[in-house]
Image 1 (cartoon, rainbow, N blue to C red):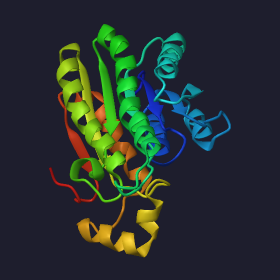
Image 2 (image 1 turned 90 degrees about the vertical axis):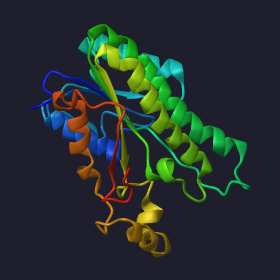
Image 3 (image 1 turned 135 degrees about the vertical axis):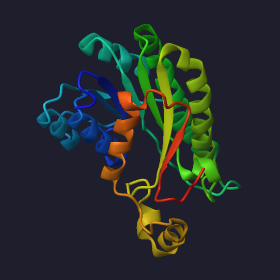
Image 4 (image 1 turned 120 degrees about the vertical axis):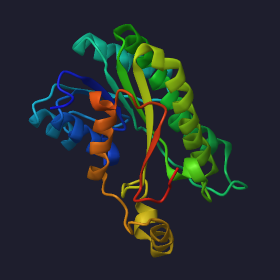
Length: 248
């Protein structure tokens, strides 16, 4: 098990890609702090991680709130004594054309997707710096790399995550910490409209050389690799897991 002895914090862990990565990391041997705004001990993702033989903590956290994020890290250190991996997955979308977008829609998406990612990186960086080891994996999207219609808030936030990854990688490399990013295109609750509405689905599938969307369980193995010792010399990179839609 390539993550045996490692401790991972996974935000947005309750469903979709977060659930997929949780199960992949559990099978790879990592102990877990699972975080979401609505997660509970009774959720299937928690039970599945426990059934894989892993120690599992659960916290309800709004990543846009710095005090809640710090409490998440403090609790992880209190119980496990270390934090080795951060999968920065929490995110939301509130689509609207830019001339119709409200200030609330803009602020909410930026605060969760971009500020939340920063809050989590900042909170884990000090213990990772002290132990001279760590792996941080952020989540952007094709929207953040290419732009998209009707989501200027989401595009700006995810584009910011892409850039934040590069700067954080440069700052933290001297401490043995890698910072990378994935850009997935998978069928999840957030992409439900794109994946199921024919007028959107067909347009997207035309742009994907492999001709289909990923399933969430196809994302986990790539994240496990980036979190492993096998990726210790990879940092500041964005891995597109999208069937060839974006080729950087």
